[in-house]
Image 1: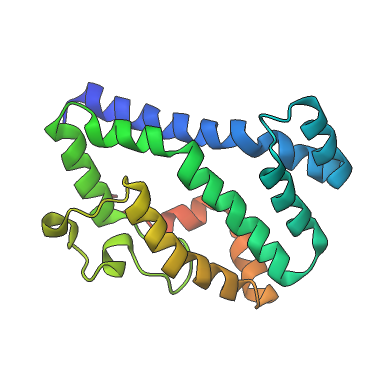
Image 2 (image 1 turned 30 degrees about the horizontal axis):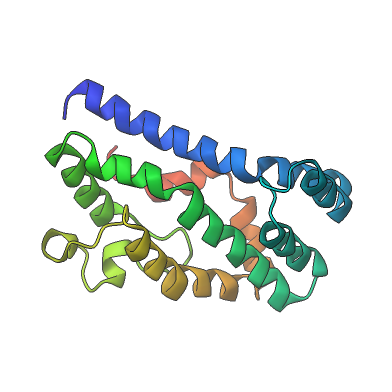
Length: 185
């Protein structure tokens, strides 16, 4: 890939992070500051940006009931992966024809689960380099969500049943966690 192409992919992934923040960042801030009253105030300001199902996810999280908290978190994850990110992932896969497709293949082969004990994307589908012959890509919403729903999310929810282990992981500085996933020095 050329330097310009590498820069394009880097910018695209930074833009995707911004899209996630733009989607729910205000809700996180409102909830942290005012609880459900903050979430409800946002919805009253803009019912289209903050639809009922999104507010209901926050109600589940706010309930304190472990099953509802898990359902609320899963609903936010589902929104992120199926409503916020798909167009950007399609842009990645379609960028400059074979460049984007090759990038999607390599990305799929390299994507690891951030959850302890979780399978890599390709490991979930049967082998560390299975993408090369089965056309499952982490950039494909259905493929990614199958992996998330059946491997990553259950392992995450199990992790949360051990508060000490979960807190240790959450409190680990991001750069230390990133070092665990570094592929190139």
